Image 1 (tube, rainbow, N blue to C red):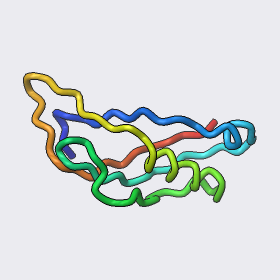
Image 2 (image 1 turned 135 degrees about the vertical axis):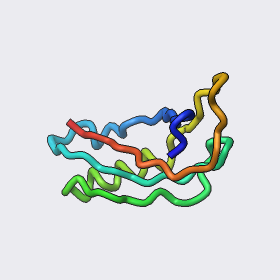
Image 3 (image 1 turned 90 degrees about the horizontal axis):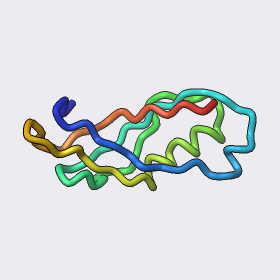
Image 4 (image 1 turned 180 degrees about the vertical axis):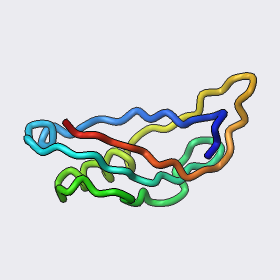
Length: 88
């Protein structure tokens, strides 16, 4: 993992999923290049136990906008990031 440059994501929850009473945590692997662009389709690594929430986690990972925090000690590098999404 690129410790000095954690990726940040801007994502949104779809209204249909927001209205449901399901809960759970998903982990989705997102592969990024040094410019924080996705280089492969996101992959579900841990299921929420709900097919609806799993599909929403994959959608958020696929459509999210990623970036790296750039600073004096940060050198962005390609990586596969385990994005953890908790639905409550």
